[in-house]
Length: 114
Length: 113
Image 1 (cartoon, rainbow over the protein chains, first blue to last red):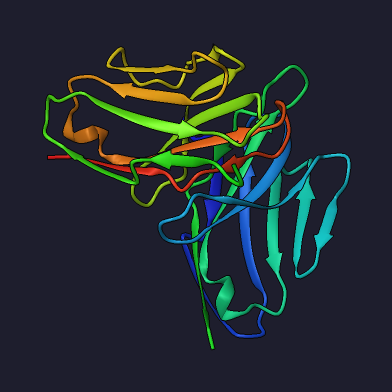
Image 2: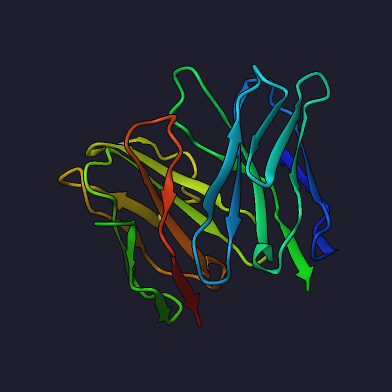
């Protein structure tokens, strides 16, 4: 059972544009939502994360928007750069007595053209 | 060390053989996770260690897979009687404590021929 659905599968953006990746989840017990960036041959690297007590979190050019009622969250990359070209994964985990086990989306391959 | 180290980086083995994949977590990190990433997919949870004990091994696909962490630091993922379907990148991650953002290694790419 796929608990985190991610779209689109791939995305092409021009340099300077805005990249938007969306995720939807089913498990209402999820309360930690990170985004990971992965380059070829490397492991995923934590980019930014949010907990459901806020609707938006911004770090530099990266922003997470969170809609608890819709069970959706998204990543916005402002002023996209060719160096942002990578695969992006959303993920979710249950908090409380949980231990950080993550459920990942299928990934979005982002290509930023110069 | 500075990051999570996984060895080997690549492993090619014949169907039916036994393999061991090693993970050196960041020093002092008590939580250690193994994930498996198939081509074009997100990582899938395999097992979680807190210290020396496997707190959750619910993601291990079958009894051919086993992992240990005898001294609470280095962990080894062991796969018996490998099958072609085991081919994937096996990722290890560690964190200072559960529910804290964790750091992944670069993975071991396992190819079963």
